[in-house]
Amino acid sequence: VRIEGRIVYEGSAGERLVVLGEFKGSLDWDGIVQVPQGGHIEVEEQLRCTQLVVGGMVTGSTPDSTISTGELFLGPNATLEVGLIEVPSGRLEQARGATINGTLKMLDPIDVQAGLEVSLVVDFPEATERNGEPT
Image 1 (cartoon, one colour):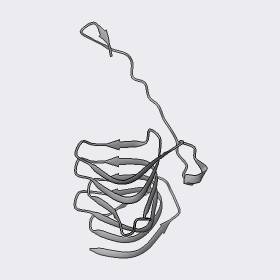
Image 2 (cartoon, rainbow, N blue to C red):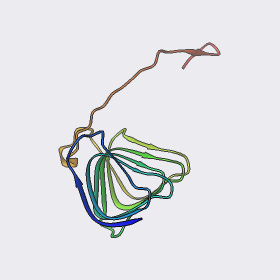
Image 3 (tube, rainbow, N blue to C red):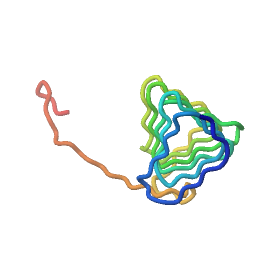
Image 4 (tube, helix red, strand yellow):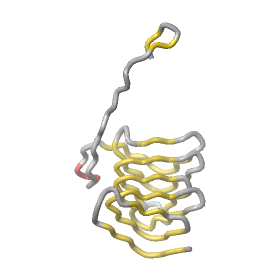
């Protein structure tokens, strides 16, 4: 399936959009966008979402194509090729084998320019010892 156009969703941050085929256009989604292996998004202008999970491909159709997201997760086969990627500092997780081609701009977690609401939850597990050394 190949869909072209513009998708806008203003709603719950927990709502998911899963792209199993191909989407070409602009995407403004107030939730989670998933692109599993085999899926492809071709960004014409902008892809904006709360969380972007990529196992497939996200490419830009122009050098000005932009991704703005509150969290970015890249699986081992993920390919990201766009002009600009904006993500808050500490909110990028990249598996070995994933590729990023473009300008990566790490923002303050509370950056008004990004236009995203980001909640940061920090969980510190209890310290343990391994071979007599704390970990």
